Amino acid sequence: MIHVEHLTRSYGPLKAVDDVSFTIDDGEIVGLLGHNGAGKTTIMKMMTGFLEPTAGTIRVGELAMATDRQSIQAMIGYLPENCPVYPEMTVAGYLEYIAILHGVTSDRLGPLLVDTLERTALMDKAGQTIATLSRGYRQRVGVAQAILHRPRIIILDEPTNGLDPTQIQHMRGLISELAKEATLIISTHILQEVQAVCDRVIIIQHGRKVLDARLDELSAGQRLLVTTDRAEAGALLRAVAGVSVVESVASVDGRHSFALSGEHTAEALAPTVASAITAKGWPLYGLAPETRNLEKIFSEINMAAGREQ
Ligand SMILES: Nc1ncnc2c1ncn2[C@@H]1O[C@H](COP(=O)(O)OP(=O)(O)OP(=O)(O)O)[C@@H](O)[C@H]1O
Image (cartoon, rainbow, N blue to C red; front, side, top):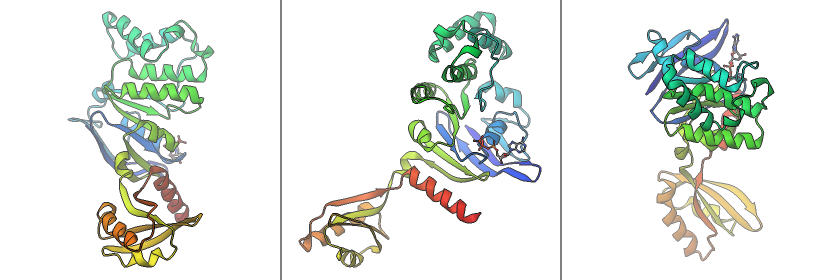
């Protein structure tokens, strides 16, 4: 379990991270989502113990970053932004060097290396100099060095940045594999990335946490969407018991859709609304809870931020 409490980091007058708190359970895949400059990298650098917070605390289990930094770092695998690797070394040479830095003993070195090269599909590049690898393969080397010592927590800063669609697919597959055995925290400014691999999202905007939700909660029903062929259905729906707001949301090809909300959930409203429409003899083309997807929330948050500025 990772506890981040009131985390704040200033660079001179700029508050890059501003009073951010969250808890991450073992085994979760959490996406830190935000635009460039939102503060994601700064949060990750503090979570990996490479940057001191201006205020706030980070705890991993019973350990506190302020007092047990090295023990926490031994549990973490970190792919920093832009994947810094030594280009003049071979893939295997570099990974061996990283293993030694992690204190891996010589008897464990061989099996760990082979396993890591296999998991990251780098086996046939093991003897190749890193400088001669494509961006996608270099990124895999970055992930390989992060997972080499079998960390319980893996923190990847923009792991798909600069990759082509095939490489992105491979990286997503690798992330899903890694998630079977570790807690994963991934930063990205790409919404689809979160939707593809994460089970929870934390949106960061101007250094502040503006949303923290599980993706399955975000797709839970909210308003009830009703579609019939009568524009005047709005008035009828307003009179249905339990409905307090009716918004006309679409009129296409003679079909009119309304979004209803009120004191009851969309599911609870549905039977009464269906009866009201069918009692009139009107066709009911659609009756379903509206899904509040991440895309909509992200754009609402961005629009709100635009109004603030
Ligand atoms: N060492 C530094 N000195 C001064 N300002 C910094 C420093 N590092 C980051 N910043 C500023 O802090 C803010 C947050 O940066 P950060 O790199 O954490 O954001 P980010 O969300 O990771 O963005 P990106 O996706 O572009 O990496 C930005 O305004 C950035 O310019």
